[in-house]
Amino acid sequence: MTTSLIILAAIAWLGQIALGWWQIQRFNHAFDRLCQLGPVGVGRSGGRFKPRVVLALAFDAQQRVCGSMMMRGLTVFAQPKPLVQLHGLHQHDLLPDVIFPEDRACQTALSLAIKAKS
Image (cartoon, rainbow, N blue to C red):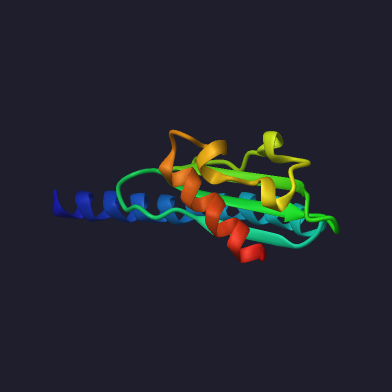
């Protein structure tokens, strides 16, 4: 019985490692595409037991958003998704509390992404 539990725990641990690697690879591919567009700012919300948000914005020479991605979730199945509603906005027009009025985690991530770019 004990051996079965140890084997099950080892399989779950290896599965977590494999799925975590898969998520990192998806993030890195999306991030590489953003970096090709221009300077990138990245922000992340905190939280241990609530969905974390990672948000990245690419800016062109006129300080307008030319690319974006957001990953949100608790599990390794979270995927990077573009935020097309931000494309074309000037850096000064990015107001986190207006863009995400009900979502504190997204507001925090967007604020940090804008500051990281500045």
